[in-house]
Length: 321
Image (cartoon, rainbow, N blue to C red; front, side, top):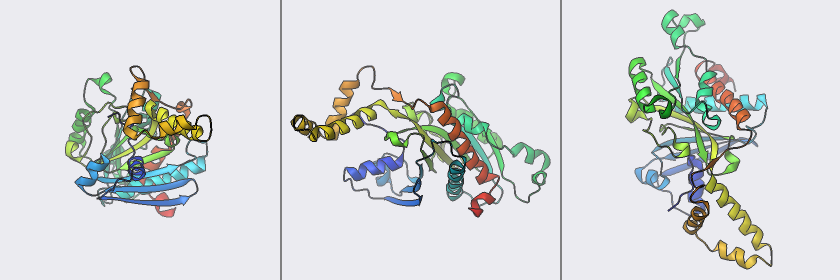
């Protein structure tokens, strides 16, 4: 069966609700910060729930920021602070001084996939300073050691991303890894407006279906927190959404109502099969991204990096907000 895919646990949970699927072992909560900022939490507690959702057990926190694609510095700062709060909530250790390796996944030369590397470009790196001069070089009693890595993609290095990161982890021994990558969304309105943070790790390249070895606690030996923003959407999703709107429009027209009713009678599997036939053979692997993706990725990378800097360097911003 042809599946319209998404990397967002929130969208999977919504689809299950639409289909009236009973989700045992899955908890959902939503907090509206204000009109344009919502934080949703999906917790998969059991193996049965993981099988139903098609995602590993763990916590998936989604920040939906409707204005994140606009140039509003105050709003982006607010999103960064919220991201810092979520990160602090998911930290696998309560140590006062932690060592964290931030990994920017993706291909810097491909704009929709360049989020991870660009976030790393804007990070405040401290590990080398602490190792050389001690934490008092910052005039503080507690300083987190932040290091970073941009491993590139297999076509550039000839190595699995997991192999590169695993070697660095063994040498530098961080308390945990934060992996940042671009994702794929089910709903076009979530493109560049949603941040997912999870403690389950990530599969590099999953956003466009290039599944590599997973980055998680089992493969790296340390906990992995993944941060992702959907920057692309599957072409089949656009066709499916267009079909839904077309059916709605047909049902409002007396002349086309019969045809609309016929299409509406198709179940999801039949619609997917129809979409696959329409898109094959040239378009069924196509992913689409907004035309202003260059500016969007630039803004989003600053927002995410600022959230990381707040969480691990300027922690007072989290407590004061």
